[in-house]
Length: 350
Image 1: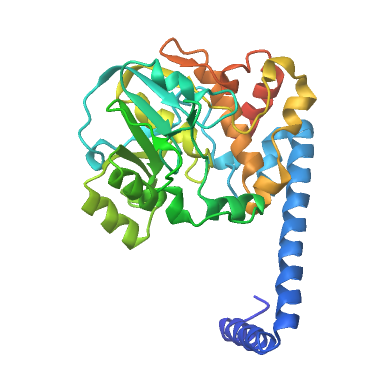
Image 2: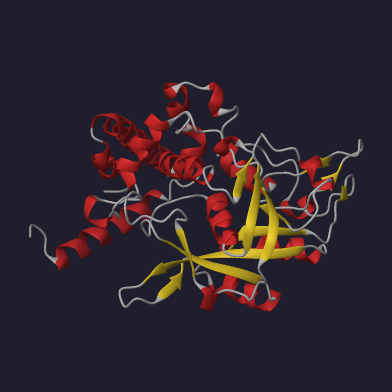
């Protein structure tokens, strides 16, 4: 080893002291953090470019440039013969007792979805990743904001036109309520679910877990305040774990559909578009491939957009072949893109 443990500690202390010193000069500190953020973003862009190149030259090696190591290496990949159509496993002993349903409708926030369809649906409806309640505008149309004002500022750089609290107390548009509707969010968004429940709606949380070295499972939502709130709310939960690779990012919609598939004989899916603005049926190979990366969303969120797109495209393609899952959004319109899917398969499986 080139550096002893004591040397590493000394360098770390020097770094902390330097950081503390620079903070005394606001202008210098602002420039320092601006420069650091730009370097991190540049590093991510280089990683994405390398992944895109390897995806076409040697797909099996794409994982090497996944910034957060979110794609499986060869030794961590399942074989194509052993892969499961549903990439998440249900952890029954960590889930609430939920009765099996004959047919359900799952609705996301994609551009292909018209929320007015909610008025016509009979049977259980699950709204995925809506951070606030659906409302009725002055023309009688159903509207749903995708994110809170605070998150919009983080994701898109938009200035907050109002605070997050008013997001749940909109006096201009009446809430749309139905006993058939359940709002579904990941366990990390339990605070939003608490506000939705307070407004009189049913809620459900999807609690993702990872496997420990001893074979037990631990939730990825380690915030004690979230766990306590979940218990106090007596919130129904479905606990799942990823069967492809523990670190694979899928996004909330795919995870929710997989979780609900264990409790429904048939699923109708609307609004699963994964940020596509038009149907992939009308796109050529390269147009669809270039939609696997969106600069601003990637850098302002979790730096995993490219990796998540591969997962969503692949399983949208696979799910659309199943007789019990009807996908009406853009993720169900990928059937002509066999070439792209075969490359994704080489990234994920042996």
